[in-house]
Image (cartoon, rainbow, N blue to C red; front, side, top):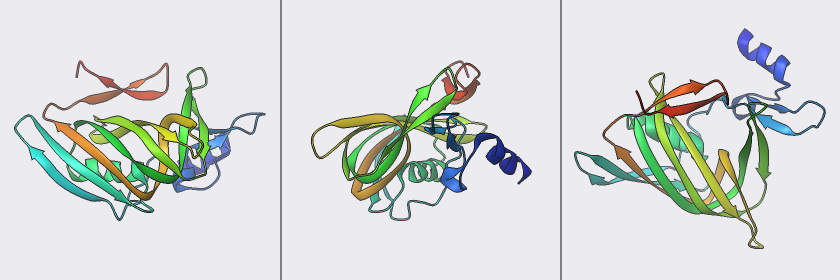
Length: 192
């Protein structure tokens, strides 16, 4: 608890849960997100999973989210429940809002991009690898607005409305992540 309180004081963080690891940039009031921001569990109660392919080399799952489900939480829960150590995925659907990020490499933080309207998920792709024995989901999205314009970035939070369909291909050879000091992120290490 002391660590969380200290983090709150140092980063100007507001709230807990998804707010943890979010703060304001010095002097600009711009919202930033730490690469180490935790992903809460249990926020996709309507998520349904179906195994659609099962071979010695790979398994393919259809992961279908329902209205109100939070995508990153659900994908992380899916990876934990199915013991996923290496996967890649794509998805399409629609959402009522999202928090994306653009990585400021020099500051080792993401600048938050808030999407506060109904949008189409035009492209969603990502991967899963493990860090310290736990799966880490990394995904980017491109969202289409009502006027045809788009916004995209690293996914931090996204709320489904009415559905999102994600196809996850789980590979048989595990991938591990390692800390990258230059960016502050965890990156896949193909030597492990």
